[in-house]
Image (cartoon, rainbow, N blue to C red):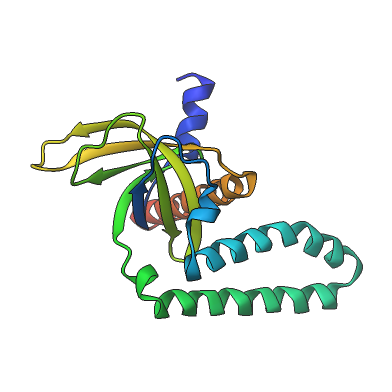
Length: 192
């Protein structure tokens, strides 16, 4: 296996997320964030702000541990409030939970319809269990029939992606992989 394939496998994970998509016109130029509204948009912005504040919190930790700990606790409170918003918002709670193959570059999932190649779309995703909200643009790269009736394997490449969103996906994938490795290692230890 070459290094490129190895890197791709490292960042690609199977996951269950909340996902909803809508097809866009080919000439759609609005950003993904501009196309979502309400509580979903607020969750996206909270996540982005949290990511931007991490380097600042590290700097504060070097100088003032007590202040940094207080700010970390405030951040946790905000995360808990965001989770409460998700649970109380019908639009977010009703998003279908589906199994996906996810990476920084795209997503693959089963769908009930065949989608045209090259079709742009808007993806609303909630990464679980933390309810991390992402609004991303994508383009259909494949939509193929499966062995199941009326089920299509749909592959989407993320396009025009913000760096912060890419970092969120990378961290999520790495976290999932470390959890899977930990479970495998504990299973191996129990089997011995």
